[in-house]
Amino acid sequence: MGIVISPAKRDLDKEVLRIFMKSIELLGGPRKLIEYRNLTWLPSLMEACYAIALKNRFKTEEEIAKELGITKQTVRRILESDPLAVKKKLTGEYVGKFDEHVAGGIAKLAWSEIRKGREDTELMIEASRQVLEGLGGPVWAVLTLMRIRGLDFPVEEPRVLKERLKGIKAFGVNLEDVAGVISYPIKNPAELLSKLSKEIRKHMREE
Image (cartoon, rainbow, N blue to C red; front, side):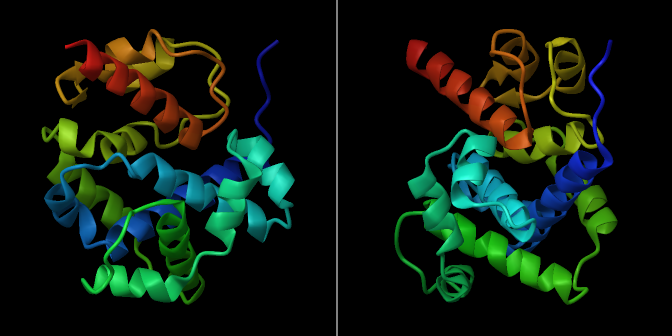
């Protein structure tokens, strides 16, 4: 018997992707992302988007940590983040590590903008797809999220992911191959990015 994905779970994933895409827009869009070069923080941004969405559903820090597979302290840093620091980051005034505190601030700011009706997700996704296709390594996380759009989680085996990620490379590593070796099940997009990122780093160390 197949896994039944509840409407609430689908709604959560959809909301998270909306927050994530708005976050990318606030950071200057996909073209601006290329300038950052080292995008290892993207999985953290996705986790922050999930944390904010789950908090909106009145989940506790402990429940959010369990859902995302991260520590309670990380969740607290995300939820206690200051959107003002993010605004300084976006205007070039912020100097410091791009950690979960900053990621949380971006996600909070993105959610605030969405609540005010300031989003055009479909346009952003299409524009991002056009820019990111073919760029590979520097933007692998964003491109991965675009390829898995509409995919039901949890993902129990690699077949679907290998098909979705075909043709994407991250620092010379084929994500189709990586999808075949990471552990399953995968509960959500944040966990997928985290597992892909760890495997990519492992491949890079071996080279």
